[in-house]
Length: 245
Figure 1 (cartoon, rainbow, N blue to C red):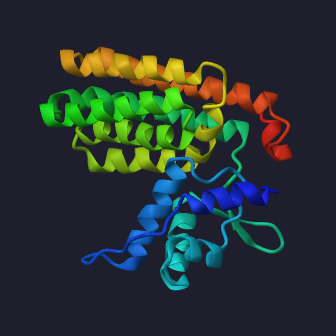
Figure 2 (tube, rainbow, N blue to C red; figure 1 turned 30 degrees about the vertical axis):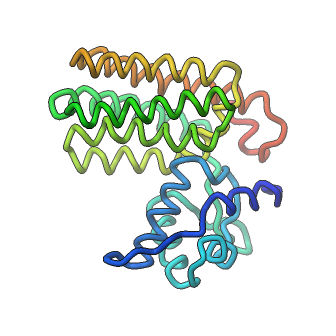
């Protein structure tokens, strides 16, 4: 069971959400919760309460209910147990390996395709995300690091201008995002991750598709290895997770 302190911390990082005109409340709540899952704000096995989530976002329960239903349909949440609570899934070893292998192929391909479509303005945004990650790593700020990590990767992949591919990649991150938070606790994770990000930046500047693809794939592989190491060593995770290997 997720401890309540961690659950409160997750909720505190959600909001409140400032709703804007032009988009439905449900769509904005959905995007915020989806981003929270991708960025690792929620942890594996964490129960998602409708009313507490609505209170954290500062909205009514109706848009939250619809957003949670959509996230369940997307695979980012699951119904669990006799009480049918909604929670962040706890992935099996086979599922994690499957996601890793899919990510290597899809994200490596997307990175290589992005070289042709990426421009100077996008490269500056990517460099800015990398710089924020470095500051977060130096400060040990996992929240800021993970948020900027997704932004860094997403900016590269979106430059490929392949919406279906991007949607599939986001679906993988939706499932594995809560576990990426655990990977950052592995020794030297920040150093290895930033080394890959710097290599990706250099490849973008040089317009080297092969080098960019290699940097992205190394980043994914290293994170998967760090996650395996963390799960093997941890005794504070649900039983089904701590026995993944």
